[in-house]
Structure formats: structure tokens, C-alpha cells
Image (cartoon, rainbow, N blue to C red; front, side, top):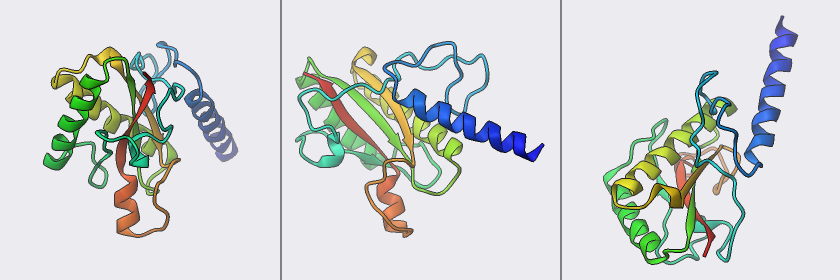
Length: 173
């Protein structure tokens, strides 16, 4: 029984990893952390970088786009995050031809599955807030990388805090 569970976990992890690299996830599969029969957000894509820095707002090279950070085990936007997102919304509005991918990230604590789901909740919270600021939802895509793309190494609270983020990658101009 244990070996079947382990095999299932390995297969599920492989499937999630492979599907993160696809152009668009099919709407009839369950979202990361979701339940069978539950549709994915149709705007979740992996996309390809356009004329912008592929690391997006994490690079600090795209003036007007800033990453936002989250508290531990939370997808709630802080007051500071909302201010940054208002600035990001202005950038998105002024770059009318850009589609922006919102990437959800987590620190290394928690299981792979849990962190992928938390990263997705973070990206969805950011997208929803940007839409409330007047950004067309069709110009925003989301993806969760969970703990797979840290920007800070180490097991300190400082490193954890930097990795709990949503960043922005313009996909086209």
C-alpha cells in the first residue's frame, strides 16, 4: 500500500511538473490543490518571454513593475502590496500591448503540492486585485511555481520572506 502511495505521489508530481511547461492547461483537469472535476482558471499559462527581461519584476530591470511579498502561509495582500499593485496597474495600463504573467511563489516550507496550491492562490489574489483596479483580465495570466524558483537561498526568515512573492513577467509587447 505504501509503495502504491509513493508511486502515485511521484506520478502526480511528474504530471504537475510537465503540465507547468505547457502552453495552456486543459480546462477539464483539476487545478493544483483542487478536486477532480473542478476547472482550471482558463488564464493559467506558462507563456514565453517577449521583449522583456524573462525574470520580470524579480530582476528589478523593468521600471514600473515590482514584485509583492506575502506573510507566511498567506495569500492576503498587505497594504504595502496593494500600493505596489496600484503602481503595477499603471505600468500595465501604459503598456497596452503587453500581456503580463503573474507568478506565484512560496518559501521552501510545506509540501510540493501545498506550495503549488498556495502559489496559485497568491497569483489569483494579485490578478483579482489588478482586475479591480481596471486591468482587463484577458491581459493577465497566472502560474504557480510553488517553491521551485527561489530568489533567496538559505533557511532564514529573511530568505523565506523574499521567496514568498508574486512577480510579474511581461509576455509580449
